[in-house]
Length: 631
Image 1 (cartoon, rainbow, N blue to C red):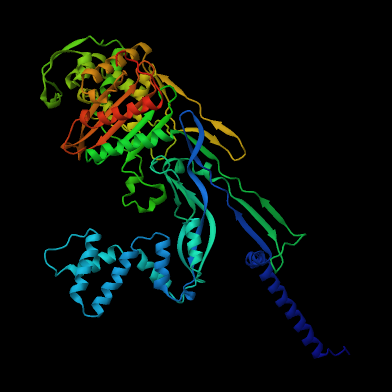
Image 2 (image 1 turned 45 degrees about the vertical axis):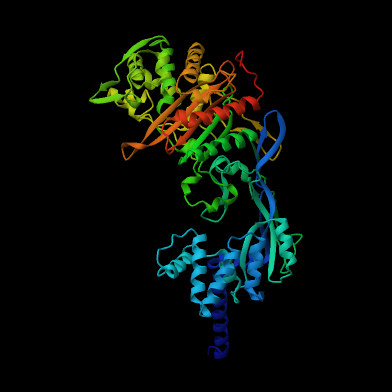
């Protein structure tokens, strides 16, 4: 007889088997299926990770014959001010106090707005209306002849441009909000005044801030430091943008295992990768020349009520950019106040335009170089020439009769340049314009450079080469023109234009940017010849106002109609003057461009006199002795 199995023992065995299965499944779930989650939770509780932020490098400039270096972009410590609105007892009083310390716009207006509401509440509508009118006038709002729409205009103006102080007061009034940012980059003086308020709701942290200490230096060369779409700090435009990675450095990291209190476990894992600070960039820009010459450009633009303009000054023998600026410009410290994003673009490298007659000396140099013409070659001008059913005329419909090549440049004869083009040939013109660098990037170390275009010369129709010979139908940038004229000044050798002198790495390594000769465009003899011809343009032609007494200056005016929707405007012109000096030993090559001046058309009255003033300053600044006897 088989032994009787105890039912209770079977039940216990089944229970333990099921229990083991449940435990096994649970372990499988935790260790396999949910391993990533619990590993992450454990990592958060028992590890410390911190990204180590590198220090951003400086952008530096110097003056001529002075070893002192001046930062135009550097890192300083600023205060990030924030508030806990739950602790604010009087938002209006605190908001007004902070606004005055931090120079917020509209503190006085805020008091006026409060008074408007007070007057309306008290039924003093006439007085409220008069105050509304005053506020609208300060905001430059055009008032109607009747008073009917003034309150509506007043309310609309407040919505369109809310008062900064009012917005701060609103944010400080959020009683359930534990955190409201007030401002970044507050100065040490501002921080001291804020601390003196003794308000427990205000606190701060110190953080690195980008500083742009040089006033009137301009933003196009420097660029600015902002944030990308992910909220990370990044350089935009200019040197800040082009060398962002170099200036930024490489972030480091600190990782260590900790206990529940946050203390490091001595036997735990630890990893430390130090941050590599960003490098410094020394520019070729001369600090004094940049500020002075660009100030003269700005005055010229204001004088002629122009839409804008640009300036480039190059050292011919090295390709060093000594000064570069454009207008309208922006302040890197206040880049967020720019209303039109196109203002960020540097017009010297970004805005291609039809250069007009400043192209003529370059085409003439090419023709002389291939011996198609000489300075004394003559042609007979009848005032116009017809090509491919197109009639090309001289400026102001003038007729010059028999003229040599010197006169063609002096009087800027369009038909003469068409004759020169025909003597040298379409293909030769195309080849030399490419050798001068047109239609290609110069490689300048700045963001947003464009190449311009000479694509019309790919067409076989002769009219395209004819118009290109006097600077129409092709586009260039002011930098390209300045570099081409620098080649004329440098005995025909084209030097690569560059704006960076040294890259200085944080480990002490220095990378010096040496001058780079790209190619010989024309022979030294041709360069000497064209220089003499351009002296004559300044002495006897349209360039008289660019002259500097006591010096031989070479240069050429250019006045070009602006094409609008494929049609040349009758009222919109660009005026340019390009040249160099002194001719026997050139210290600078320069272009001054004035965009759409008012009440005056020709460059001889706009760009040329600005060029002359800057040239005079440069020669005095460099201490160049006069090279003309008796003057």
